[in-house]
Each structure stands twice: as C-alpha cells, then as structure tokens.
Image (cartoon, rainbow, N blue to C red; front, side, top):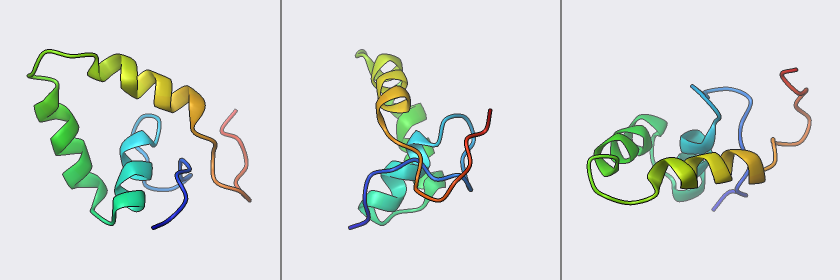
Length: 66
C-alpha cells in the first residue's frame, strides 16, 4: 500500500479521493463515486473530507499550488 499523501496530479478538488484511491489500490473515479453516494446517507462526510484535505500532506517533491 502506498503512503497516504495527496498527489499533485489526478486531483479534482483537494486530492483526498485520489489519495485514498492510491492507498487502497482502486481508481480515483471509483473513490469519487463512493464519496458522492455516501453523501446521500446521513453523516459527516463533508467534514471528514475537509479534515483530510487539511491534514493529509502533499506528496514529496511537489511544489505547492499557491
């Protein structure tokens, strides 16, 4: 399993779904579909996404977007 870091390539918003997909060996599209479907259920999905966006580091060797 790969380290849990947000990639610089293949990200749509924050790279959280791409990071989780890389970690668990699935495609980023699959992870995004799972996230969108989970948003139909009650729970703190958006808060979890925002927390992971802030807490997960960007992969090494990548320049910050800002």
